[in-house]
Image 1 (cartoon, rainbow, N blue to C red):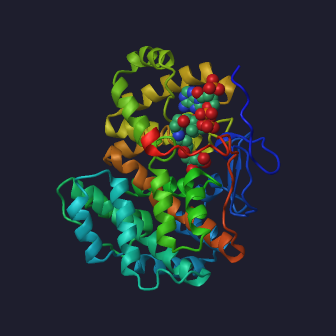
Image 2: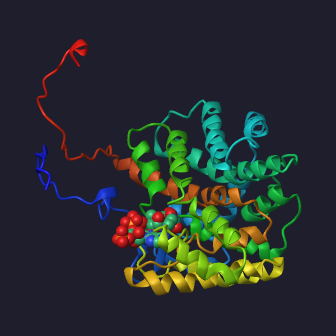
Length: 388
Ligand code: SDX
């Protein structure tokens, strides 16, 4: 047994890697009930918010403001957002320049950075100014994402139509035509249920960055960077690629057996908090079937259900079930959205949660500064380089 190295640390040294179970702060923004598979935003279940008809705008208002809006408040908020939806020519030029040469999450991250460079008040760090930035970014994310999809497909960038709702205009700017009501409704629902999820990696990244009292654009860029990863928001893209790789439902067993052999993690499954079905996967499952059937891609949902049965039978006892990223890609694929655009769509929703968390923490800000247990050597003797 290797000699136990001295641990140089003041205080307790028991810890779990990845801050598992660590508490960062108190919040009233959302509650992720991991044992029972429930997700609550400011006291309201996502199921009620999806059924309520208030749309993504109502959820964004609730997350950022803390209360459900009245009709008049929602109208004013939605009008404010719609009026901020346009993006400057510099950002359009950037998307045209690099949009087809790099992953859409890189272009989104860079576009946010350019928006920050163009905002002369970017470094005025206070709730009022950061709320103004949050509103603009929440409004502009769909415009940037839609422009990226179009440029990557050799199409011209479309400007917003402020007379349309948030999700409706997002779909129009992306596809060039008015979305059918059901598609707009489902995209709205997708944005609602992706909007916020406690102290996930990208929210934590945004908050840690913002806790140094830097500008909000830098903090949101940190969130985008984290969300891109396949263990987090990038899993929706990776999951659909798994289904495309399996291709034939009859090959699902064979694929899973090989994945098990390689001890490969199956994308779209597992969660640090949920040890039951992710309620967002429960909502998406039937919609994925509906949209896949409509688009003639029913085999993708069939593969998903076969894989779900295999993984849950094998790993359900360890609390591994489908998460939000398992079915969402089947829906977006059926809507004609490019696979590598799935994570930017996640960001189009999560900008509301990132903003709400940053704004909630800012008034009583405290720099995040954890420590690591030092297990290296101490007091080593320095040997001059010509003697090494
Ligand atoms: C999101 O945090 C959030 O809230 C995120 C999110 C949000 O809304 O912000 O919900 C969105 O990111 C959902 C997760 C998307 N990611 C994926 O689908 C990628 C695949 N999932 C895994 O990488 C994993 O489940 C994580 C990263 C999501 C969570 O992993 P943990 O909590 O760090 O768990 P772990 O990696 O320590 O695994 C524990 C055990 C291991 O087995 P043992 O070593 O104990 O034998 O479970 C196994 C793992 O091998 N395991 C899996 C698995 N996930 C965990 N085995 C096979 N396939 C998987 N997907």
